[in-house]
Length: 574
Image (tube, rainbow, N blue to C red):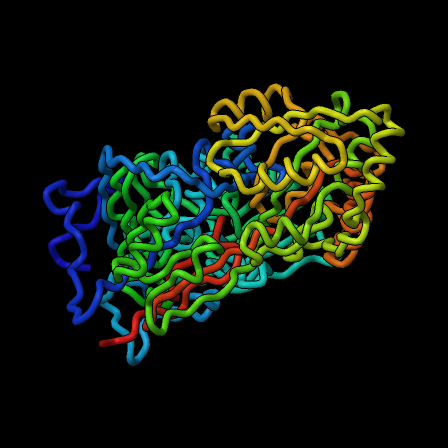
C-alpha cells in the first residue's frame, strides 16, 4: 500500500482526505486493462437462494441465491462509500490458498487495474445481514475469508485453517489455525476470532446461520485450535464453512459493516460508488500469497449491448457472462471465449398447492409439452438440458432428462384426463429483468398442446410480494443460482407448495448422512421423485459464456454468479 493511506482505526475509519484516493494507474500502451463481468446476479434484496437458506427468516435472506439476467440499461451513480484498510506485516505465509490465488509471477504486471462489471450491485456491504448473492460474489475470499474455501470443483480446500481432522463418529471437527493470520487492520486472527464469529452468526441468526444449524458448540481450545461439535452428522459442514455463515470477522473491530469492511482476505475494500462500482485494492500485507493485480474495480453495466461495446472498444477485458447470442459479434483479435459451469437452474415453478397445478396430470402435461432442446437453442445453445432439481455440479445429480421427452400428443392426453380436453389457460408471472426469450418460447410450445399462456412481467418487488411471499401465482420462472439448495423441495412452506413426505424423509436422512457418498445417494433418490411428480420443470442449467481480452489470465471459470475469487487474476506485462 502507498504510505499516503493510513491504517484504519478499530472502527474501520481512515483520514477522509486520503481514503478515497484511487490506486496508482498502471502505465499502458494499449487499451486500459480491465475485466468486466456482466454477471447475471440480481441483488434486489438478493435474488438467489442460499442453501436452506442461511440466516434470518426473511424474504431478502431466503432469496439470496436466486439470480437473474438484468436487461435494464440504466445505472445511476448515487452515494460513494470509501474506506481503505492496511494490514500489519504477516509473520508467516502458507500454501493453504485455493488454486485461484497464484500471486504475482514473472512476466505479469502486478500494478495492473482490473475492472469487473456486474449486472446489479449489492444492496449494502453488511455480510451479516445483507443476503445478496452479489455481495457474496464481491467479498467472499476477496475481502473476507473462512476456515475453508471452495475449490474450483466446489469441494473444500484449506484457507484460514491449514488442516482439520474429523472424529470417527463424524461429530467433532478440529481445525488448525497457524500463527500469522491477520485482519486488514493489523489485528492477529486466532481461533478465538473464529469461535466468536461462528457463534455470533448462530446466536443472532445472521446470513448463513441455517447452514450451521447442526452445530452444537464452537470453542477455541487455544489460539491455534478450533473445535466444532455437531449435534448429529452433517456432511455439508465444510461446504457451509466456505460460505457466508463461515466468514471470520474481527471481534474487536467496531466498524459499520454496511459501509466498510475489515477482513483477512487478499484485497482491501477501498470505495463503493453506489450505482456504479466497488473498488478493491491489493492487501500487500496479506498473510498468504498476494493478489496478482494491484486493484479490481467491480463495475455495474446492465445492458448487454453496452457490455459488448465496451469489450470491443477495449474499455473492458472480460465479459462474464456475455450474452450467448452476442458472442459472434466479438471484434477483438485474439480474444478467448469459454463456458463457465454453474449450479444455476432456470426453474419453471408450478404452484403445487393450488388448482389446477395441484393435479399431477396437468403438471406432467406441461413438462411433455416443452421442447427442451429448442429452449436451449433459443437461449444461444450454451445452456445444458436439466431434467431435475439438482445441477450437475452438486451432490446427488442424476441425468433425468429422459423422464419427460417432448411429446405433444402425450401432453394433450394428460390434459384431457385432468378435465381440460378443450384447453387450459394459465398465467406465467416473471420478474421483468428476465426478458422475453423464455416466455415467448413457452407461450408457443404450450399452445401446441392446448395451453394458453398469459405472461405477466412484474417488478422484482412485486414478484417477492405476490409469488414468493403470498404464493399467489400459477407459473413462474426463476433462476435458482445457489448450489446445494435441494432443501427447498423438502419444505412444503416454500413458494413451490410441494409437499411429499418421502422426499422430506430422504432429505432429512441425507443432511445427517455419515458420508458424502451416502448423502449423494439419498439426494438422488429424492430428486428423482420430485422430477417424476413434475413438481416443476427445469428449463435449463444456465451456463455462462465468458469473453476475455488477450493478456488476461486466472479468471474463475465456475460458479461465478455467487463466488468470484479474484486473487489469481493476472495481466501480462506489456
